[in-house]
Length: 402
Length: 233
Ligand SMILES: Nc1ncnc2c1ncn2[C@@H]1O[C@H](COP(=O)(O)OP(=O)(O)O)[C@@H](O)[C@H]1O
Ligand SMILES: [Mg+2]
Image 1 (tube, protein in one colour):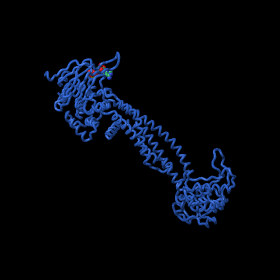
Image 2: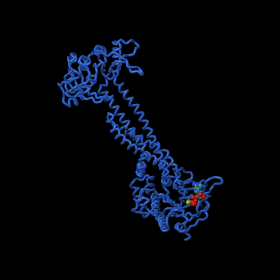
Image 3: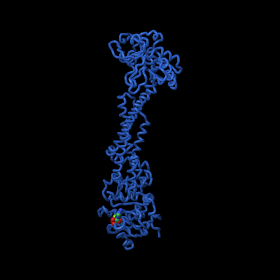
Image 4: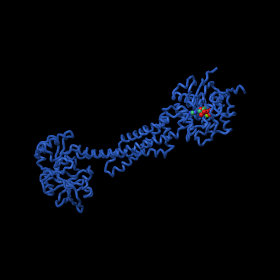
C-alpha cells in the first residue's frame, strides 16, 4: 500500500514538473545552503585539525607580552634568553623537547632570484617540537649550533621555486649580506592557518641568526612540547611558574608572557567558523521555512484542484487515513526531491568554493542523510494541514465540485 | 424468500432548520432483493440523489434506519462506511468522474489498490473488466482520449471491477446521446442478467427506466408509486 502511495505521489509530481520544481525552490536553496555551509565548515575543522597535528598537538608556544586585553596597548616585555630555555629544560618534568625561535623576514638571494622570506633561527629540537621533518639532507649538528655556523635548512617552496626543484644540498645562498650553505630541505607543510606559505622559510642555527643576522642574542619565542596531550596542562603550569620566577613577577601581578597551546588556537579558529556557520544556518533555516510554506501553499492548491479526485477516492472506499497519507507522501516526496536537488547543488557548490577558500572538500554522508531526512520532514510538517483538509472532505460535496 | 440486500425503514433526511427546513426524504421505506434491477424516478428535487447517497453509504439518514448487509448503516463510523463501499458497492455517476490524465487501466486499478491487491492481480482484473464493457485495447487511453460513451463504460468497468454486490448509478446516461444511452443500458442489463448484479439507477427518461424490472417513483421526498414492470410485461 505504501509503495503504491509513493508511486502515485511520484506520478503526480511528474505530471507537474515545472510547478513541482518551482514549489521546491525554497527547499532547494535552503538545503543547498546547509550543505555548502556544513561541508565547508567540516573542511575548515579538518584543516585546523590537520594544521594542529602538523604542528604537533602537544606543542606550546611562549611569547613575551601579557595576554591580549580589550583596549589594552601591547605591553613591551623583555624577550627570552638561552638561560630561560636551560632553566625550563632543567626543571620542567613534563617537557619532551624545547626549541628557541627568532623570526625575521629578510631578503634571500639565490642566483638571480631575490625575494623576501621568513628567516628563522632555532636549533635542531624545532624539528621534533613542530613535528617538521627534514626530507633531504640533515638537521644541524650540536657543534654547528654551538658554533653558530652559517649552514641552513630550506623550506619546500624555496627548493621548488628558487632552486626550480633541484635538490640544493651544498648550494650557497645569500641572506642579506651573509652567505650560508644549504644542508637540508624541510618537508612540505602547505598554507598556514592564518594564511601565508609556511614552506617559504630558511632555518639557521640560532647563534648564527643572532650574531650574523639580528645582531642581538634575543629569543623572540620558545616552542616546547609535552610528553603527551595529557601532559600539556602540567607543562603549562610548570613553565608559567619557572618563567614568573625567572622574570621576577610579583605574586598577584599579571604574567608578562603568554603560553598558548594548540587547543586554544583550534577553539579560537572554530569559534570564528562557528559564528559564521550560525549566521549562515539561520539564513538556511529561513529559506527552509519559506520552502515549507511554499509546499503548504501548493498542496492547498492541489487539494482544491483535486477535490473531485478526492471525492472519487472516498466514494470508492478510501479511508481518511489513506487520503491523508497520499497527500503527506506527496508533500514529503516533493520536498525530498527538492532536498536531493539541493544536496547535489550544495555539494557541487562546496566543491567549487572549497579550493577558492583554501579549505579541503570534506564529503560527509551523515550530513547528506540528515539534509535529506530533514527536507522530507519539512514536507510532512507543512503538508499535514493540506492533507488533513483533503482527508476530511465530504465525498458528496467533493464529487459535486467543479 | 431471500433476505434483502438493502432496506429503508422510515428513512428521513432533513436539511436545514426552522423555516428553511427541507425534507429531502420524508419517511421512505422499501426493500431491494439481490439481483433486482431498480429504476428510481421522479421530478428534480424529489429526493432521488439523496436516496442514492444513503444507499451508497456516502450519507446517513437523519432519522429511521438503512440496513445494508444486516448492518444499520446510520450507526456506523465514517471509516466503517468507507469499508462497506470498498467491499460491496460500485458507483456510476452522471459526470463519469474518472481520474483525469490517468489511463483507463490505472483508473480501474484505483479501487483494487484500496483492496490491497498486488500488481499482477490488479492488471488481470482491470483488463477483464475493460473487456466486459467492450473496451479491450483502450486500456492505455486517458479519459481525454475517449468519447463520452467510452468514458462511461470505463466508469462502469471501475464500478464492477471489484465485483460489488450493489451497483448504484445516478443518471448514468444524463450526459450521453440516445444511442450511447441505450448501449450503456444494454451493458447494465447484461451485467444484471449474467452476473446477478443488483442495480439501482436514477433516471428521468421513460425509455431508460424501461430497462429495469422495477420502478420506484418519488415526489417531495416520498415514494408515490412502485411498479413491477416485469410482471406487467
Ligand atoms: N446538501 C444539501 N443541503 C441542503 N439541501 C439539500 C442538500 N442536498 C439536497 N438538498 C435538497 O434536498 C432535496 C432533494 O434533493 P436531491 O435528492 O438531490 O433531489 P433529486 O436528485 O431528486 O433531484 C432538494 O430540495 C435539494 O435542494
Ligand atoms: Mg439528483
